[in-house]
Image 1 (cartoon, rainbow, N blue to C red):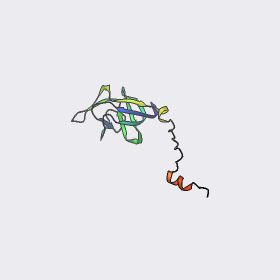
Image 2 (spheres, rainbow, N blue to C red):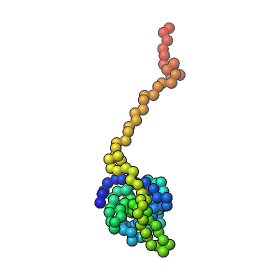
Image 3 (cartoon, rainbow, N blue to C red):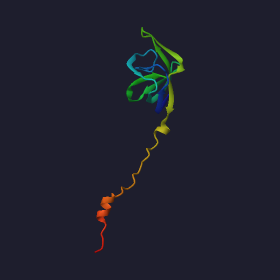
Image 4 (spheres, helix red, strand yellow):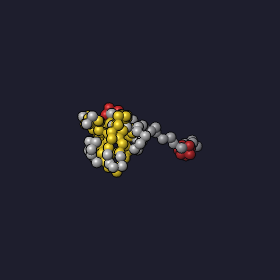
Length: 119
């Protein structure tokens, strides 16, 4: 079991179903994760010879391997990967770069009106 902040990208060509628990027999929600999308994961759990990933913000669980759903509700977990690890804690916790804005230049019309000419 690993806890922390991780980013995973969906590499499966088909949408990935979201389970309500970290078990292949758990009910599947109506929501799916679309191919190519990236999601925050807060927990990795090895269970039933498969790795289950807990989506952040309590949205459910996904399986690291490809999952196929039959019309009768039967779940089959394959051997190929459905998600790919992208980032972990250290790279996500980097401080944001602060960009300093250079001082504004005075407009030429303002600069010309402030110039004092000797009489």
